[in-house]
Length: 180
Image 1 (cartoon, rainbow, N blue to C red):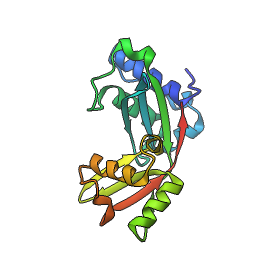
Image 2: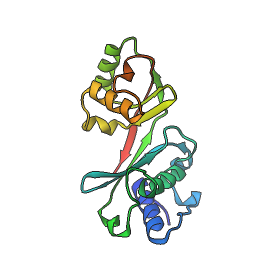
Image 3: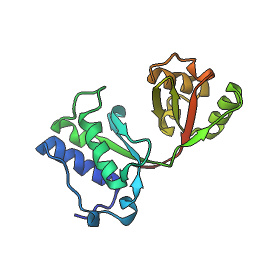
């Protein structure tokens, strides 16, 4: 089989795992050459317009097609926030594949500058402090449009106080190419 879209690859992966309990094996010749390059992605599952699973890689560690396969399986069966996807849910799943650019360090001069820059650019964001780390895709701006709110929720996701972003935190930004 030749895969034409990243979403198709993710869907076939999830269906094989859920229906047969088996991992999809794909040969390089079955995917476009660009997908054979190192790449990082997130696979997001939604059901009835609500999050049903989301797992991904922040930095490229394997060919993009393999990252799609691994993250699709993980989003469907290993996202700790949800029970594994069942066969009866497969037809209802909406799948989104977000391919990340390489994260770039962001060193704002002040908390106010950070808020301004994030509000203007609305990038994906990685926060790190005291060994804790969390990431939000740029799509999260749709749900949390205010920069301070976005940062506070991201800090909480990392297991830190909501105000932790104000001092001593490392930031990295990235963009995504989304396929639905």
